[in-house]
Length: 601
Image (cartoon, rainbow, N blue to C red):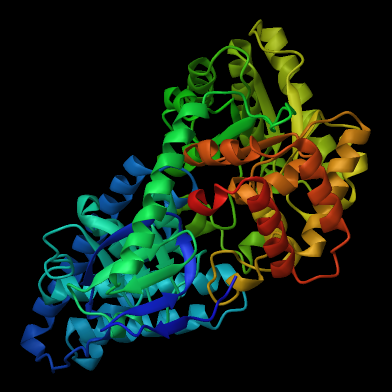
């Protein structure tokens, strides 16, 4: 994948061909709308006289309150349109706005320095942003962008309205910008947005994650497209291969139209085969499961071809309520999900995975850690808070009386943690038996392999588990010490890195040696190229966002299991090669076996 923007100047009048990063697949053509914000505008400074300080402080408080209302509204709108990790992008914004120190520092600037509110917000936000940007922790570095996003919106509100002048397109268009923040991305009217093209950004940035979740084609990292185009220019945008053509000629338009037509035909084919069971072309079963949370419309999973739930993110109940849900509330949510699926389909519930980037507001305020990703999170938190753990385990057990419920322990690093968790489970089973409450006595218990330590002791863990689920998002992150949403190191987040592939291979072999099934529930499973490689490596099931199931099912269904195994064998011999070359090789091989990938991915 090329991270350096490439610009080819066409011989035709005004035509440009530009190459960036494919952030969200799809083909679209339309007029440019050049999106400019107040981000780079000079904030005017003026002195506030003593008798006007109270008025200025009131303006500041009002702007914070309005911004908080706007962000909450955006978060609500986002929650209606998507579910999963992307739906919580605005949690960090709200935590910052609710931090009394942030508003307090701004007020202090106004009161002591006698500067206007816009300058106070600008100065304080720059200080906060620079502190975050200088931190070694990749997650905290990313918060610098949240601060900038919030500050831009507060300043716009102070200047007369955050949304009053930001977007003025009157017809469907392709938005071109230097860079888009999450709030800008979700604020734009979806009926007018055909696609996004930006100078900066990575395919792991928040805006890119949102574009994919919303199904909007996008190309980022184009270098200087916002300086190259004008509003009204025509653009061909290929979000599948990361290319845009500015003011195309007739030949370019015709070629693009053929590609769009081919893509549309193949999308229709996805609809035809998505309800069939997942399998390779020679009949090797590969069930395609869904990653969900309590807000996901469970009855809609059948329509995308999901064969069960491979990951139920229970922590989103905590995040939604901003507190621990009661045992009854949990039981209701888990039971509702179980009953919504066809009989026999599994619902794999991951026990509470709070910590790191997922915290309730109350917990975040009282539980400060220098490095939350390496701290008291997930299974560590639950074992240190046994009453919380037991309430959740009892709720999961009670739901198991109504269908095929499985439970899964996240972030396991030692055999002692697994044993301690199972001990708590057996204690809860005894309590329910004594109370005469029904549950599945043979409920399956699985371990998430998302820490390198777990992969290295997979054989020992397999002896005391019923299944493994590989969480590639964290496995890659912890193996390579790379935050996948930090643009400065995004290029190092490599699923085909030799160490990652070795850990996956080790996990699969250990599981199969003990007759345990293995699934992959991270984003890697949703990449059709990686999906074929994972199947070849022996992964039994793939779990992903529901909307991506038809695509992966289609590509896997065009590849013979023997060809997938051959690909995996070849990759095992390439473990000394750079990760990007390994991925490029896999993509070429998969495209030979499934040429439609060119138009679908």
